[in-house]
Amino acid sequence: MIDIFTKQRFEAALPVHNVTGAVLWKHLGMIQGEHCYSIEVLPGVLIHIRSSMGANGRARNSGEDSIRCWLAADETGTPLGSKMSRWVTRVPGWEERLTAQLRTFWTIGRKLKPCPVCGKTPRALLVKKEGPNKGRWFTDCCSRFQWLTNPKEEKPDAA
Image (cartoon, rainbow, N blue to C red):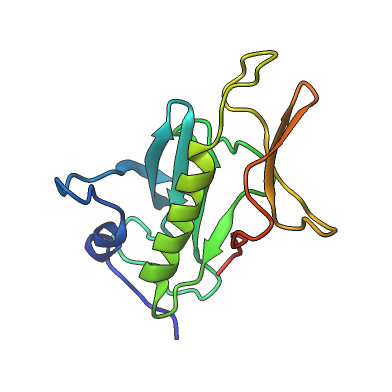
């Protein structure tokens, strides 16, 4: 059963500072017909969130729409790597799954550092697609390869 939530309920599920209660997200307005949000991780590293909520402030009725989030370079949502998006299905419990995805992106985003050769921030962000390291995140710039997750760390999967 698809959960049809309101904008108020969605925003209540987004992170706040655990001491001050200040919101850690920014409402970007309507982008391509849905409310979008961002969370700054580092300068030039944002978590971009597409809510699946239309202009009426309610989640869409379609079961095909889900909440999407990814690491982005700016508020337009330009991804830091290919196929970095994660989906959170809108069935009961979506709030906890969204929180888990945002924490994963926050952790990975905090590990992004400038390339020691060209100084580009952030370096290209990728996920290993196959083999024994499938699902591990890494950066690669100017032939400087670096793993961002350990093999034993939980892999960030779509929910």
